Length: 167
Image (cartoon, rainbow, N blue to C red; front, side, top):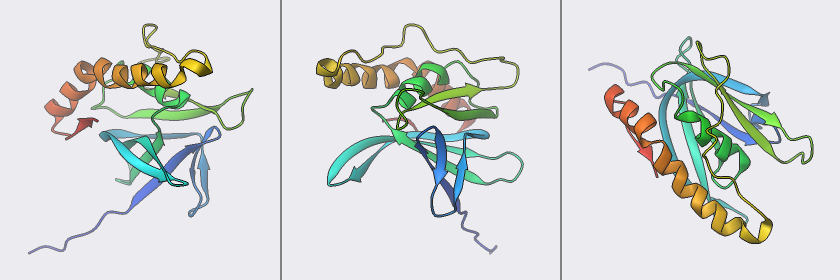
């Protein structure tokens, strides 16, 4: 029997234009690796349940595994899902954050991959409207997030044997 090594994960949260791990004092704007898993999880903040997305990636040079977490109902998630179906998930890519110039708490997502100069957002991807409509709009966006990407993502995950993709 061989020794079983438990991998440590590097947890990064999207916060104010950065990927942050407060315990390890890490603050960066991007992470590069290959997708291992993308899933929806439930988190709790101040007694409220919040839907979040976890993107698990493996650094191809160090074998480090990072778990990047962000709120499902956010501009970051919209940017992520509007771009993720346009890349090859079996190859390394960069997932990054950009801060908002109008609101310091808001973050935007960008994705880069070798061979693609800029991963453009899908123009058909829905965006939330006025505040009164926000709940309904985010419900529609949530459905679009999981409906738009299965062909580009779940099939890739299945073919590569990478596991779960979806809610």
